[in-house]
Length: 178
Image (cartoon, rainbow, N blue to C red; front, side, top):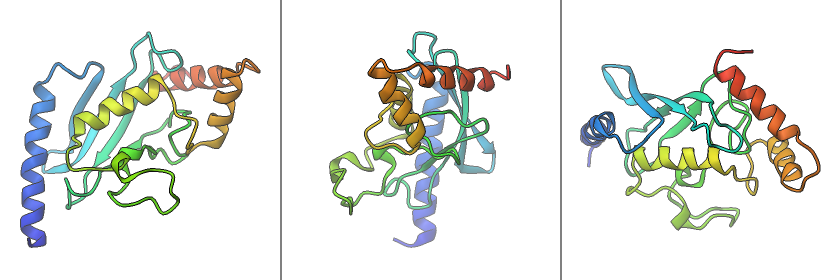
């Protein structure tokens, strides 16, 4: 398949998935839009965290979901905008680290199986469900933010409440309160 026809196919698929997500009521707390109406490969995502969430409740985080021309065979990239959430699975530059967004190949470090990584069966909706899940239950086992993971582990062990304090500050900043 030529690069041009691959990009055209990806654009058609993304446009369909974008339209479906805009109409769907299944993904509570998530809104999507295009950064530029002429480019279906870059989405603006708003994530409003349910108040019942243990750490991030009430937060409102914005991100960009960028799809490669090889989509759905290669994964998109999700990057949170400023202020970047203080989270074990989010790098300081805002990029989300989650297995399903890693390329569909064997992990050279042996940490993830190929089944945990990107697969064309994933959709923008399944990605965003996984993001919501990470806000509800952060993964401190393979951290992108070592400080956040360390503080989360210490909090879970009852050693301190620094993680919760940092996250509450992050939530207030997401609402423009700090």
